[in-house]
Image 1 (tube, one colour):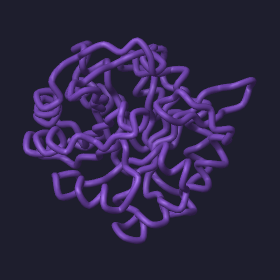
Image 2 (cartoon, one colour):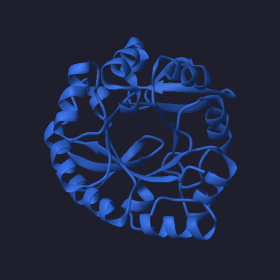
Image 3 (cartoon, one colour):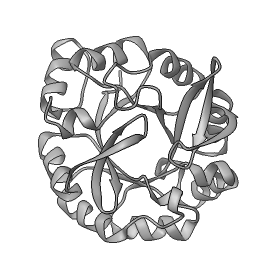
Length: 251
C-alpha cells in the first residue's frame, strides 16, 4: 500500500493566506511564509500554494512569495494560479516550485497540458478541478469557481489524464470550508476512473473525516486548509491518528 499524504494548502490573495467557504467570504488567516514553515516542521508531506486571484485577475503568480516560501520549507512544493505557458512554469520551477497546478488555463486551452507534460514531465503537472453539483451532475467550474464551463467532471478528469496530467487535485466546491467531511461519492468515482494519484480537497472537519476518506476511497492524499490554519488540529495529530487506525502514512 502506498503511504497516504497529508498536504496543507495555502490559498493566496494579495500576498496573504486566505480561507473561505465554498470559494467566497474570504478571511485572512496569516502570512504564507510563516504558515509554510510551520507545516514543514510539523511533518507535512507536501505543500500546495494556490494564487486564487491570479486566474480571475489574469495576473501571474507572485514569484517573490513563491521564492520566500520555497526557502522556508524542506518538502515538495506545488504552485498554481495564472499559469498559462511553459515559460510561466520555468519561472516557477526556478523560484523553487517542484510541481505546478493548472486549472482555468487548461480548460480554455487543453493542449497546454500536453505541452507541459512533454516539456517538464507528467510528474510535474497537476491539474486542479473545481467541481460543483448542478442539477444532479458533477460539473467543472473555472476562474476561482465563478464560471460554469459546461464540462462534466468525469469527462474532464478522464481527458486531463490522457493528455499527460500526473496528478489531479479535486476540490468539491459544495464542501469547501464547510467542515462537513469530504465528498466521498465524487472522490470514489474519480479515483477509480483515472490511473493517476488524486488529491482530495474540500470538507475536512475532524480526524474521522481523514479516516473515512482513506478507508472509503482510493484517494492518495488529503488537502487541508482551514482545519490547520485555525489550529483545530495539526499535521502531526492527523498522522498519529491515522497510523493508530491502521492507515499507512509517511512519518
